[in-house]
Image (tube, rainbow, N blue to C red; front, side, top):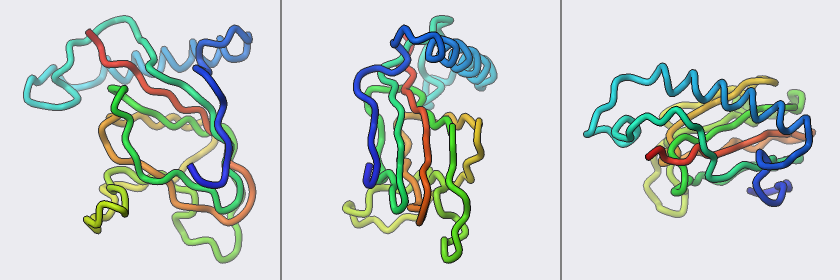
Amino acid sequence: MRGGSQTDGPLLSRVDPRVRTLREAIVGAVRRHIDNLPEPDPGHPLLARPRDRRIRFSGSWSVLLRGGGRHSNHVHPQGWISSALYVALPGRTAGDPPDAGWLTLGEPQAELGLGLPPLRKIEPRPGQLVLFPSWMWHGTVPFAEGERLTVAFDVAPPG
């Protein structure tokens, strides 16, 4: 992360009633997502895992990015399904590229020198929850001004 701050410790384990309510909503959304995945496939990196009714988190946090902030492309090796929940977003600024602040999926770290573009870019919306495989490269396009607040978590591999 560049140009922002992140909460300490596992956010979704906090006893604050607002966080407990958020956790319940997230667990429901993740459960529906998993229930709608295709049938298990032992040859597929996401679908090979057995399906467990219990949702466990290997990590959870909140990030506040400020103008110019971004997430460098990275993966989450301790997770099975990763996320971005958009709580608040900055307004558009003159001179911003059309994809300022967007989530990128599938673009490796620039330091690897592969020069591969993202497989997909997702325009964030307040209240939107994006779920994707934890092994997928992901990052964000910088935005010029304002603040962006997100909640993120990794669903632990089942089994």
